[in-house]
Structures are given as C-alpha cells and as structure tokens.
Length: 143
Image (tube, rainbow, N blue to C red; front, side):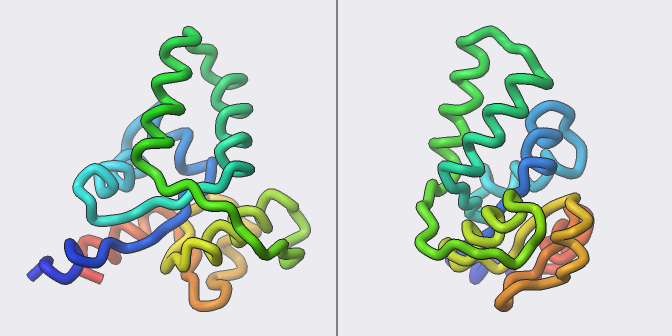
C-alpha cells in the first residue's frame, strides 16, 4: 500500500541538470516533477540553486518575460525554498557543494542529478545521490 508514502512524502533536491530537462523536454525528469504534483515527493531548492536555474534557463531557452516569470512562480509555489546554514567544501565544484547544502538543510533522502562528480559520491550523510532513472525505479518499487 502507498498510504505511508502519501503521509510522508520523500524529500529530494533536484539538480539543475534534471530540473531544466524536466521543464523543457519532459521524459523521465518530468516524471519526477509529476511526483511533486501527486504530493509523493517534496523538492527543496535554495535561493542559490534557484538563481542558477534562472540564469541557465534564461540563456538556453529565451522565453517571453511572462512565460519565464510563470515558470519561476510555479517552481516557487511547488518547491520548498530553504536557506542552508552550513557551508560545505566537499566537492571541487562549488555548485555541487550548494546542492549538498540544500539537501542537508532540507533533511532530504535523495539528490537527483546527472552530475558525474555528485553521482561518484554515491551518498552524503545518509542522502543517496541518484540519477533520475535510479530514483524512479525506487519510487516504482514503493521505496
């Protein structure tokens, strides 16, 4: 039964390299976003991660100002915005450290990413670092 999962949604951080394809192209990354709409997962994002998303999304997908603002508004409404307290220096890429900080602050179970450096970590302080496909397999199996 799925009652426990519905009562306690899984907490995750979506890396920008998953969030952008989810919005722009669909596919497996969009399946993860659908879990947010179904209230099966809660996605945490920090102001720094949101700023990075905005910068990359604006460059790669020039939208009208209204469409861009609507996309940002939807993210802000669907995701939990948190301000990490701890600053980490675990990864050589500073952005990867910001992802870890957000997941730690949000007490997340998972980071969903396509970033090889993060994936090579495998986990960080009991937070599993997975690809979209790996995460969806866990969700499909009821985990």
